[in-house]
Amino acid sequence: MGLILVTVDLVRKRSEHNEGEISTLEEIALHQENIDRIEGLDKWCRDLKILLLQSNLIPKIGKKQTYFPRLI
Image 1: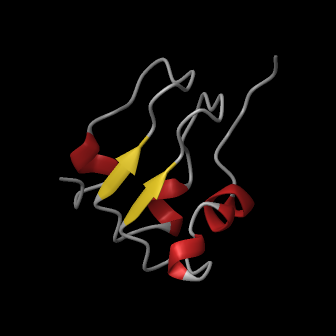
Image 2: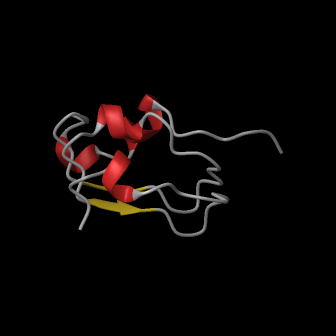
């Protein structure tokens, strides 16, 4: 299986409750997507507070303060 990244389309699909608007998104559930990298998400969703990533293939996540300073 190849590299699976978070894409703008995936984020929009999972942000239906926010009418597809991703720049103001505060919470997103990206579980069970076989994702191995979350690059870009910090640029698209600057107000993100809750990020659900269980059951993915992400081997390592950097410091949350660096990428997602508002995560609780």
